[in-house]
Every structure is written in C-alpha cells, then in structure tokens.
Length: 303
Image (cartoon, rainbow, N blue to C red; front, side, top):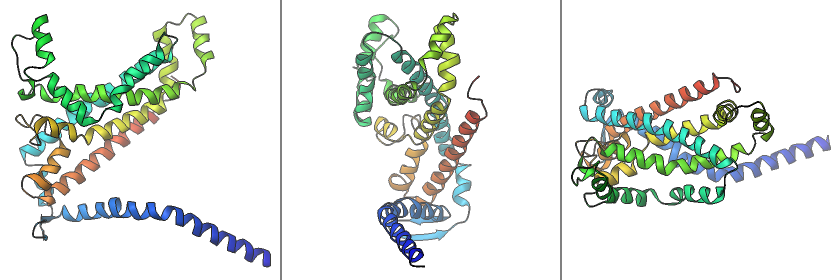
C-alpha cells in the first residue's frame, strides 16, 4: 500500500515537472497562435475598424468579395504561378546539386561553401541586390547589350511581364542551398554498396541517380516540397520590397500575403476582408500540402 502511494506521488511529481517545462511554450503558442486564429476567424465575419475598435457582423460578405474582386483574383493568380514554378524547381535542382556534390568530385567542400552562402544572406539584402542587377544601370543591361540579347537599357523592375519572374529566379537561387544541405545529409545514409553494384552492372550515372538516389530520397523530397509550397504561398517580403508595398507594376508582384497586409494596415483598414483572405490562404496551403504528401505516399519507396 505504501509502495503504491509512493508511486502515485512520484507520478504526480513527474507530471508537475513535465507541465512546468512545457507550460511557457503552451502559453506563448496559445497567445500568439491559437487565440490569434480564433480572433482572425471571428473578424472574417465582421466589418472591422481597428481605429474605432468596432466589429459589425456582415456574415459571409467578406468571403463573397474574395470571389468577386479582380484584385484578389490577381493576387491568387500571381501566388499560384509563383508556387507552381518555384516549389518544384527548387526541389529538383536542390536534389541534383546535392547528388553532384555527394559524388567524388574535387573541391566539393569549397563548392558546398559557395552554394550555401546565399542562405546566410538576409532576404532583404538579396532583394536589394537583384533590384540593382535588373535596374536600368545594372549589370543585366550592361552584359545583355554587350552580348546582343538586350537591345536597349530597360528598367526591368517596371516591366509587368518580367518582375514576378525576377522574384522567382531570386527565390529559387536563394532557397536551393538550404534544401541542398538537407538532401546532402540524407544522402549520407544511402549505402554506397548500391551505387557500386549498379556501376558493376554497367548502369550509367543517370540511371544510378534515377533508380537509387531518387527512390531513397522520396521522404526527404516530400518534406522539401511541402515546406517549399508553404513558404512560397506565404511569400511577402520580396514582393513588398520590389514594389515598395504596392504590388506593382500593374499588380504583377501582388501576392496574397502582400494583399492581406495592404487590406489590414495600408489601404482600406479592412481587417475583416484581410482575415477572410488569410483564412482562405491557410485552407489552400493545407489542401496543397496534404495533396503533395498523399501523392508522395501513394508511390512505393522503391520503383
């Protein structure tokens, strides 16, 4: 009986100690994540004026506006294009670079350092660099005119058909090193005997890559692709800096995250509509992530 009471006291003590450690994290998450989600959902059904702190219930009006306003459609269109290009491209290129750097080539440590440098640079600094590169006096015009593929100096930052593509290139270039490092770590667990056996059988480097590297990297590819989807759907800072917060020229760099910021704080002080758009964006991200995860799980580990 005494033994049982002692065990119960120890269990209670363990529980108290455990909750003491996780308590601060629970409090922080509750304030800044869970409560914020419920507040955003509530505001999405109201016409909100934060200056006057008024909440006027308007039902589904905010959600109806999402499907009727051209500007919101443009933002979702830009974001969808951005995700469709950047997420798969950065995933594929990161895997290829990791496989190359994992092979027995000279100077692989130096190449790893050089490729990883963009990750150490802040997103703001990278954006400013790319803005200079594609400005009217930037090196892109200088080199382009010298080689003949640019006819005259152009400020590419003011070209609606080009600006989003510039952000795509910059995003791919800056995120590949991070994902490449993840792939490099995972490649250390692939048995070298598989590559050696395939080489003895006469398999080419491409076949070894497709039949050994790619199947073994499928769980990592799923993680990289899903995190890439989440990150690209939430792209804000680069579009904000490129357009000075306006989403221009002609809404060509207007993303959903930037538009949420504009509606909430910059343009109309329409926090209700901003909350509704944010909720829809969260739902889209969840659906896209689940679809990507299910697509990966539907394939066998070994092809």
